[in-house]
Amino acid sequence: MQSLNIIWKVLAILAFISLFVYWKKRNAVWGGLTIGIIIGLLIALFKKGGFDWYIVLKVGIIGVLFGVFSELLSKIGEFLKKRRSQ
Image 1 (spheres, helix red, strand yellow):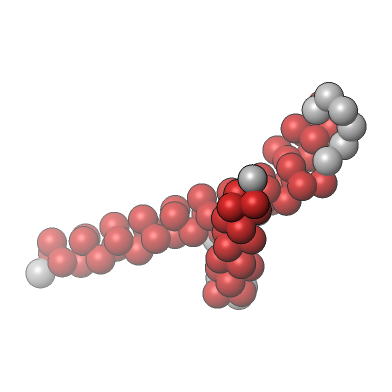
Image 2 (image 1 turned 60 degrees about the vertical axis):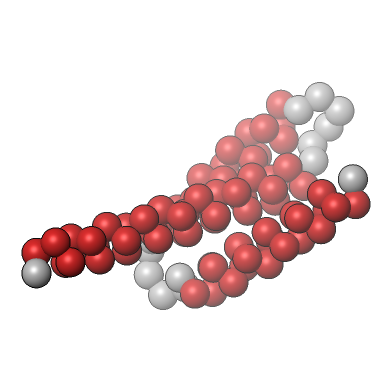
């Protein structure tokens, strides 16, 4: 179980770094965080055993990482489109 906590710490650090990298404009990273927090709140509200903030945090981290993945796919697509047109 301790290794699972280390994994979430590493993912949280990556998510915070990503938020700072994509700070200036609206993009999929911030959208992923917003949707992740909303979904995390809903899950935590209906969870048996009471409200748990760690669920909100974990789903928010997952949302940020999905946003980063989406941004990277977009950049790869733009690169391939430019490469194809040359």
